[in-house]
Length: 114
Image 1 (cartoon, rainbow, N blue to C red):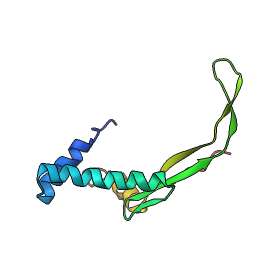
Image 2: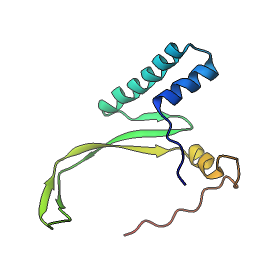
Image 3: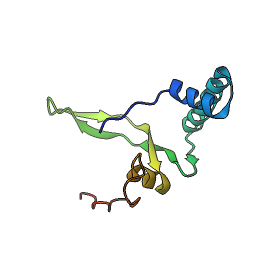
């Protein structure tokens, strides 16, 4: 199941076609939205887009990892990671499929490994 990758240029083209802005204005709008999301995430803020999902920045502490090739223990520095949590509405749309097939019900989640 490999789909097409959507690029910034693709998003700009969709805004151009559907909103009616010029190509330049459409590109500027897409860049502005992406820049604002990026700036918020850099500040550690959560970006919540209704009916789409949330981008959350999490802090991970230092831990000991292992080089799989040598087996040697190495420290992994503390860092921040970004996680995307899709909304229930987005999950339903994805599970319904591109042609609306399916019952729109999400498959039951399997229990987390312990």
